Structure formats: C-alpha cells, structure tokens
Image (cartoon, rainbow, N blue to C red; front, side):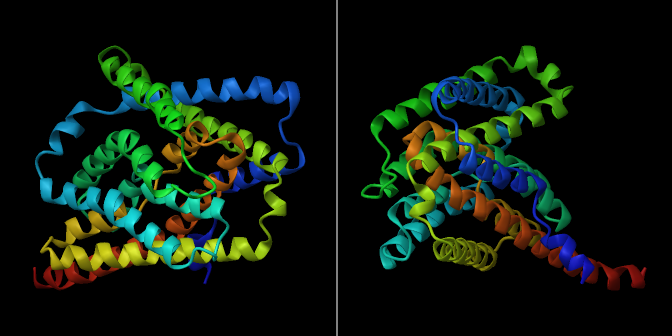
Length: 332
C-alpha cells in the first residue's frame, strides 16, 4: 500500500503550479504588476526556447534518420492519433465541457511529447532508451512549428480560437529563438551543460510565471464563476479517457506493426506524453490572456495523470522483463 501511495504522490512541480493558480485566484496581477510581469514573462519564454535550442545535440536529430519506423510511429501518435482522438471526443460530446476547456483539450492533443519523463519511464521499463531520446527530441523540434498549426485547425469555433497573429508570435518568440540557440550551440553548449541545475530552475520559473500571468487574466475574466467543481471532475475524466485510449493504441498498435518489446516500450511512453514545458509558454504566446488559463488547465491535469499512470505501467513492464530474464539466469 505504501508503495502504491508513493507512486501516486503528486509531482512536486505540479503542486507548485496549482499553488500558483491559487495565488493568481486570490492575488491576481493587475495594474502596474501586470504591466511589469507580462513583458518579463515574454522575455523569459524567449530565453527558455533559446536555451532549449542550445541544449539539443545535433546528432540526436541526425540519428532520427536511422530507426525511421520507430520515429514515424511515435510522431504519428503524437501529431495525428492524439489530435484525431481529441477532435472525436469534442465532436461526440460538445456539451460535456465549456468551449474554452474543449479548446484546452484540443490544444493539449496538438502538443509534442515530453523529453525527461519519456526517457525516464522508458529506462525504468527497460525499453529502447536511445530511440526514445531521439524521438522525443524530434517531437519537440517539429512541435514548435507543427503544434500551433494543428491547434489552430482543431480549435476553430471553440472559445479559445487561435488567430493568425498567435501563430506568428510562435515564430517570433519560440521558433526563431530556438533556431538561434541551436546555431549558437558550438559556443555555449559547454556552458549550458555545466549549469543544468540553474537551467532547470529557469525552465520551471518561466512556466510558473506564465501560469500566474495566464490565470490572473482568466480570474479577472471570471473563470471560476464559469467552472464549478463538477466541471473539473468531468475534465479529469476526459483527460483520463484520452490517456487510456492512447496507451492502448500505442501498446497494441506496436505489436500489430511487429515492433520488438523494447521499441514497444519507447512507443508507449514517448507517444503517450504531452509536454508541459512546451505547452504552457506556447499557450501564453498563442492565446488571448483571458483564454490562456482555461487552455492550460487541461494540460496541467493531464500531466499529473500521465505521471501517475506511466509510473505504474513502467514498473509493470520492468517486472515482466525481470520475469523473462530469470529462467535464462537459472539455466546458466
């Protein structure tokens, strides 16, 4: 029981994010504070994606050309299966959630995979770690350009509709700094590698600031009056259903396509993830301030659910691997 509780324990960073939402609810940024924090948040996002570009090894991109079936499958789940599922759910039950939250669910479906948790869970489950590293890197590089375009198509007609100016902001504030950072990699890669702790704080600080700004605007626009507890429970159920379907599709789809067990694990854990680190700044840039809070909320809930479920699933895969290895060890 204690082991189960440990696995289900919330990610500390998610706890901080929800505390940030609470702070924005009671002490929203208004007046001079908002005027100062908004450009600071934008500048922090630009720096964040510049550093992402600087930290991405070019060999990871090049090596994606190797095991192309694995990478195409993972990218297909991330940028095709996920958006189609989100669209199908919103079309089947449009009245289940407010339009703004459906916009957030659809935005979530358009995002790239995570890097850290995908690799960590693949490693625990004894899967293809090298394949996951490459696929997650490719997903994030492509996601900066593809995700806004997919999200723009998916959210048409929703309350959180994306304007063309929002897509253009992605180019200026995310894609352009990312490319510049990657071009500057020969000069600053060593500096970035020696300061992983500092850069991790920068990453999380940027996200916390973006969440605070977004929810401050949403609170002032009356988000909590439009979102009772029952709606939050329904949103949790929608996020859980979405993750469950994707996990089933990736697991059994990988077997139908004839992938080895190690590759199946990579597809399951990289294909089922959605990036909070990319999604929160992207939402802040793309959506009007009053809509961004509702858009971010499904991503925050989905992120915590995916960590809990995938932690359990990774240990299950690891136990199966240990059971398969045991007979051969006894023979020797």
